[in-house]
Amino acid sequence: MSVSRPITHLLYLHGFRSSPKSNKARRLGEMIADRHPGVVWWCPQLPASPREAMQLVTQGIADWPHISMAVVGSSLGGFYASWVADQTGCKSVLLNPAVNPARDLAQYIGQHSLWHDPAERFFFREEFVQQLADLSLSDLRHPERCLAVIAKGDELLDWREMHQRYARAHVRLLEGGDHALSDFELHLPTLLEFLALA
Image 1 (tube, one colour):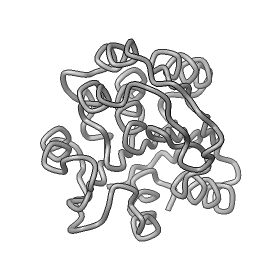
Image 2 (spheres, helix red, strand yellow; image 1 turned 180 degrees about the horizontal axis):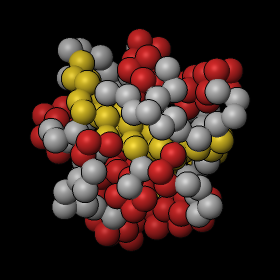
Image 3 (cartoon, rainbow, N blue to C red; image 1 turned 60 degrees about the horizontal axis):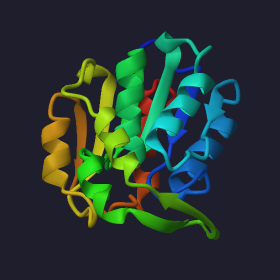
């Protein structure tokens, strides 16, 4: 599953109400810093606006080499990561990726706090739903460069929908598990092998 060209730049995109303080983001960032200190690591705090979030990301990776960069995304970040991979052709690793967030998040219009910093609040606006719809892709252009880690025990997203969406990609389908991938440590070797960083 690995490729000969190692990754030189790695982007991590967190999910809805999440942040760079998430367990998965911190653990992967620590491992990259420890084992591959030469790899450029970026895990930005994403704006609530999907349009602004992707503008931030696009500007941030403008000088990155597409052939040796990769993106990892969790939940809503997985949806964003698919869009980034479509734009750049880079490798992507999707962790319980949201498939139709425009539908799923329409019921969450209003004020929210971040999971890892409850004092930090944001407002999810009605127009953000359309912005999510605008980022939706009809199909994967580079399924061979995508790894989807999907937990059947995901309590927030339908694993069948995720599996169908990414059926042409490399899929690691987990029995049980949860949306947060609490056992993320167990899946790091697969993720790093796919990125040629094992």
